[in-house]
Image (cartoon, rainbow over the protein chains, first blue to last red):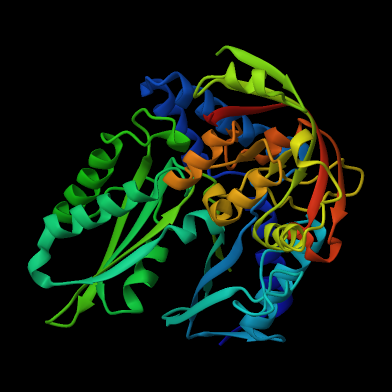
Length: 281
Length: 167
């Protein structure tokens, strides 16, 4: 049984949060550069240039990419042949979140209770953590700093199996277009199909960790990803709602088995400040 | 792109000369307010009291900045989604508000209210906080410091880039 000190993992999580708060995923930078070359709207070009400039200025000036520095989301895959010594996984992740908030500093964006007091925790804890066990002696953490604006525009529905491919595509496109400029396009769409009422949104969130623009291994899902991206981009919301052809940078689908009566579909919307990282120890 | 320099306070004739999508470089004193600050400001106005700044002379910036690192003027600065402030906007306009800065669409009713009041809604680009921070000359907490990002901050802008969203 491999033993890993919780301090080692905590430090890795702390460094990961700190890094992605200032350094945009290079795949997003490349996708935006491609979008800029294709763009016809002068306003959208101006906005894309500002976004690309921000990718350079943020690490240089040590000012976060976005003032909404996000909530920490972690998908942890824990090898059954390893053991964390010291703090538990939630404790060490939350300690890393606290430290990153204080040291960077990041914005304190978490309230302890959602409706009545809405009092701010002032340290961004607790992180939202999903744990699964896998074979092996490593720990893999998929970590995101997720902004509130795009999260607010995310949606899910229990469709009827009769809805089929076109039903899903129509549902996704209609709702992304209805969100307009509010989730800060250009967007990345994570789509979960199947599982159940709580499972589909988890798939959607996890789909956002797919390498940007990776084609789905199943041709049928790949065609759906392309059709969703193309249809939304042809309907003119554009960068920040300024028109043009770049509302969505990429669409990623993950699917899972589901009940014979169900076709759950969830869409997790991600803004262009795509703060995601994978840590393996 | 053509850029129009405006300095707060902005007068009615300057607003009426603007067109949709014009790029504006805005300078002057603004106050930030998100959901909670709006709730509190409206409560003050409903009691018949006045706010500690003149809404007609300034702009309300829908923004919750991140804290400034030591030695910096400000942290990350950028707009939040304006439509969340739509329910508060009619009362703010009645109290004299002329200029709002945020991101995203407003409701149809709010668009009509803004136009009817001869006010101006400016759109700033979301997710470019490091760039926007370069246009901040000063930033201090003005009201309700304990609210953190939801407090009202007084900010001095210099050539802050934004676009005419509703006029």
